[in-house]
Amino acid sequence: MDQYLINLLHKEFKIGKMKLTFLHILLIVGITYVTLMMRYCMRDNETWDYFASWEPWIAKMKEMGGFKGLSGDFYDYTPAYVFIVLMLSYLPVKLLYSIKMVSVLFDIIMSIMSGVIIYDITKNRTKAIGIYSIMMLAPTVANNSALWGQCDVIYTTAILCAIYHLMNDRPAKGMLFYGIAFALKLQSLFVFPALIVLWALKKVDLKHFLFMPLMYFFGIFPAWIAGRPLKELILIYAVQADKSPQLSLGYPNIYQIVGTTDFLEVYSSAAIWLTLGFMMIVMYYVARSRVNLSKEFIVQLFLLFVLISMCFLPFMHERYAYVADVTAVIYGFIYIKKFYVPLLQILISFSAYSIILSAYVNVPVIIYSFATLFLIFDIGMGVYRYVEKNQKCEESA
Image (cartoon, rainbow, N blue to C red; front, side, top):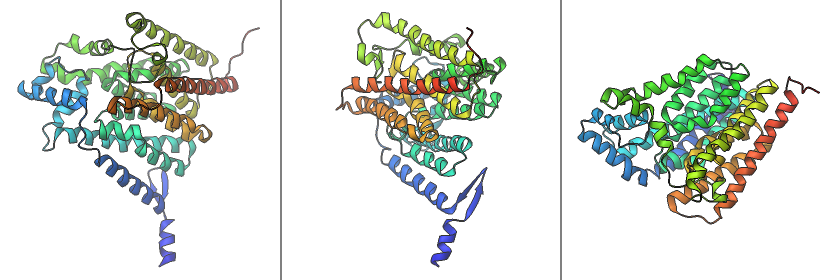
C-alpha cells in the first residue's frame, strides 16, 4: 500500500501544456483551500469604501430604476465596474459578499496567469506552482480582495494576460487585454510607456492601440445607453485624476520625503511632467538600442515603469501599487537571486495598506519611500545591464 501511494504521488497528469504530478495537484488544491479559508475569515469586514460609497451608490441606482441609475454622476469608479457591481446587487447574496467573491475569483485567475507566465519563461513547473501559491498567500493580494473588497485584481489580471500574449508575439491579443484593463482602471496607464517601447521595437503595430478606445467605449456603453452624456463618460478619467487633497494618499513615494501638502498646486502639475521626463529617458534609451526583447526583459520593463509611476506621480493611493506587487513577484521568480525585490515591494505596499485600513504605522513612512527609490535604482540597473549586453546599435564616434 505504501509503495502504491508513493507511486501515485509521482504519477503525472497532463494539464494544458504542463505535466503535473499528483503531488503537485495536492499542493495546488491544498494552497487554494487554505487561502480561500483565509479570505473567508475576512468576509464580514466593511471598509469606508463600502459603507460610504457602494451601499449608497447602489441604493440610489435602485431608486432611479436600477440600470437607469448608471446615468448618474455620483459614482467615481469606471462605468464598466459599476455596471458589474449593480448586476451583483441583484444576486440573493449580501452585496459585500458578492463584491468580494468576484475579486477572490480573480485572485485565483491572476495567480494561475502568473504561473502560466513563469512556466512559459522558465519551463519550470515547480516555479509555476510556487508563484501560484505565493500570489494566493501575498498579504496585499488577499487584503485587497477579501478584506477591502477592491477590484484591482481584475484589471491587473488583464494586464498579465496582455504581457503573456505580447511576450509571445501575439500583439493583437495582448493589446485587446490591455484595452480591457484600460476600460476598468485608469492606473493601467502606468505600464503604457512599456507598450510604446514595444511599438518602437516593432513588437506592436499602431493599429493594435485602437483596442484601447474600443474597449473603453464598450465599458462606458451601458452608462451611455442608460442616459449619461457621452462627453461626461469620455472625460471620467480626467475628472478622477483631478480629485485629491494631497500629493500622496497613503503610498510611500517621493512626496512623503518632500511633503504631501506643501506646494500642492504647483507640484501636482509639475510632478506629472517630472514623471514623463524620467519615462522618456528610459523609453529613448531602450528604443534607440534596438535591443532584442526577451520575455524576461519585457516583464522587467513593465515593472520599472509602474515603479516610476508610483514613486513620482502625484495623488497615488496605497492600492495603486497592486500591479507593481504582482509584477515584482513574477520578476522574483524569474530571477531568484532578486527575490528581495518582491519581498520589499510587498512590504512597502502592505505598510501603506496598514496606514489606511488601521491607521497603524510603527516604521516611519519616509523609510519606505527610500526603499521605493532603491527598487527603481535596482530594476533600472538591471534594464541598463541588459540593454548594454544586447543592444544592436553602436554609438557614433
